[in-house]
Image 1: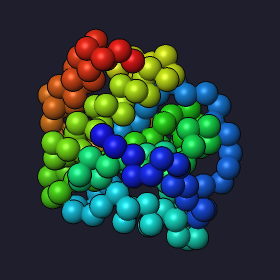
Image 2: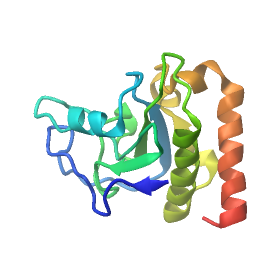
Image 3: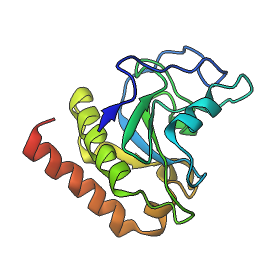
Image 4: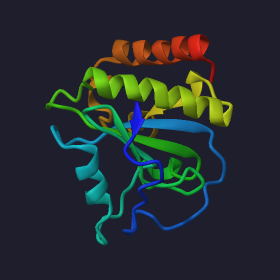
Length: 163
């Protein structure tokens, strides 16, 4: 994976309120719900004054990662878990919600890195669905075996590369 920019590409809309996160206990995985859009397009949506939602990270269709909100601040993506989760939104090419290989590879890498940064394990990686019951990320809600495979891939990545 690669960062779009070495610095945080922070949003300034109402989805970033500057409130401090209480402490990271989980990493919440999401999907954008708008097939074929890029990470930058989703960032630009978050950056509008009237947009009240946000995410710490966006992963694009080419595996690019944009950090929208510092991990020390609350992002507005996981409802009543906003205060203790890091949110990762992933772009997807079509209505199935499945991530392409580039997006998936970056998601595995970023999730493993965040687990290392916050002393977490894959038991602390959740779907938005696990918080609200919303079909997000859609593919992983509809295919729980794929979710388990993703968690296993994160574990393997951490075993091979460290946290």
